[in-house]
Image (cartoon, rainbow, N blue to C red; front, side, top):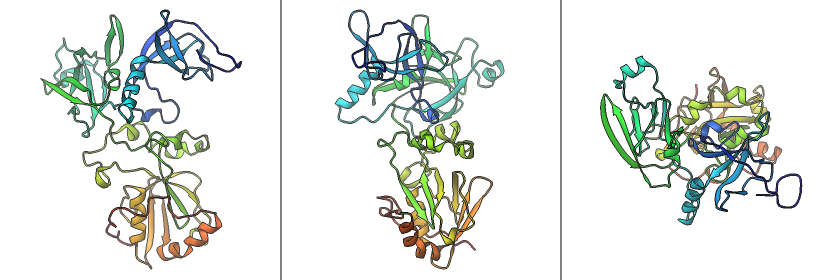
Length: 380
């Protein structure tokens, strides 16, 4: 039921549940950054623009889900509902005072069908499961690389990663992890070095290199140094239609492995936070940066030989470089470099900002906080 395109009065469509599946709710350029697969109901009733958020009822009048997506394109009669289980988890979290998102799957795994791979990890012939290829040290669960996940909450995991949802109905094991309320314990049986090990812990969201949602875990921040505009890469940037044409320049650096890779225990950044991916997105015209161009986004690697872990750290490193020294920015694409005079950067800052009608060289909140880092060695 809803108010889709084609009229102004309420619309009712009817169909059947064609499939119960476990899918990524996020679509588009940043789909790889999602927490993991969630349960979804596929229906053949029409879902058009304006239907999203409308309830779907079964024959007895109870709600079975909320309409949110259709496949579109060449597909016909393929729409999707968010099941009530997922909706109830959301409502329970909101009732608790704050919604902190869906718990992440704390490991990546591959199918375990190959006979040689099974022998290598000492998996008996009568045992099924999936092989862990990446694991988060931030998760309390304690799953390790090369563990074989045999079961989750007592449900046997198949060699293809499937578990039984209902009798003879198989879906991905990920829904057992993402479909829980925060703080609810999860039990995982693994085969580790040929021995069975029982693990149990509550799951939560994990630190991530790419913030996912504008206004939720990411906000527009920037730092301008000598006309070079640096920002933190986030999913909304990849999803923005205006970013098309830049993807090819950074996609090899910001792909599934980077976005879903799990950071080390110390986070690799300030205060245990995950190191940010910093982009040069624009060069504001000024005499001191003449000869440098920015036709595509570039990922910043180092400033004067040191890798900045965040926009704040980048700004602090810049301020710590003494007058008379140089700023040497090195980017990940082929070691591309930009060298600027630190003194000229500071002297030209007011003119650059005035020329381009920018109120400040940094976004709000980036100038203060935290101790000043040790000054990086000036570029020769």
